[in-house]
Image 1 (tube, rainbow, N blue to C red):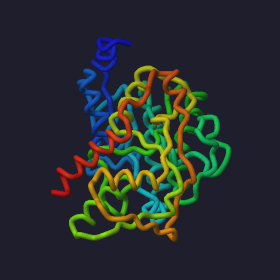
Image 2: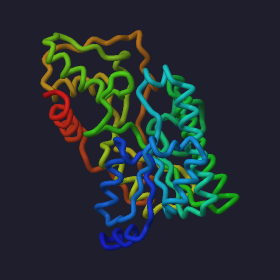
Image 3: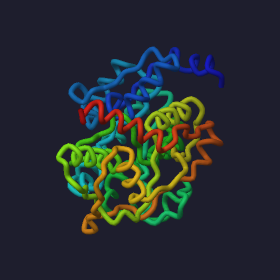
Length: 319
């Protein structure tokens, strides 16, 4: 599809982007605008509590969307998952289930569910293939969140089978980039380490403390790439099977921390708190399907993305 085709696809569509004011959602909305979308509605939690079916019905009656891109999630790092397993399970499950059910009743053309890497089993063979999604139980610290989001895949497939409802399900790997959440109580590893480095430099401290052993591995996808993948899938993919969105590389948390220390300019050392949990042992996605189905491939290199993220943090918080 050429650029004119992309614009034509979005031009007359009425689109709801849940979580459209958040980290990933803001970028999705901006890229939709860049593609020619004119009618985008972002429900705000103060006006629409999406855990309540009455609020969802009110939104659907008001907007009458053709498409819903469900980005909204109650999410956090390992610490936040350990402290809020019930909330993370209930809020994410009920919000997604009610949105899909009400969208079906209102005749919404297409529903795009944004799942999570946390849905994969703890010991999934690397690289993670979509077919391995059900071969075991997720890593315990984030299982309630991962399973809640995974149920939206089950619901999408069941609704397609019974009602012909066009719901697709995407599995993005860990995201990062400018605008990320840097609050220590709920942030993920990259923003947490960036903040620790700048805080240590400000206080003239000689070390930072990182959680776990540093041996586990992760894969990271730059937020702009993730948004582009979501939009390409919305345009081009109508299948029932889940699709990974990733960058296709693996890095240990130790290597990640050392790279962030280098790029931030922190001269101290990293102390590893082995009493804190590591989380899932390895994470790296097989991204073949996204490329085959809708031509998605990550463009931003990891170091380039980290530099942009660090620069954004420096401008907004570290000055």
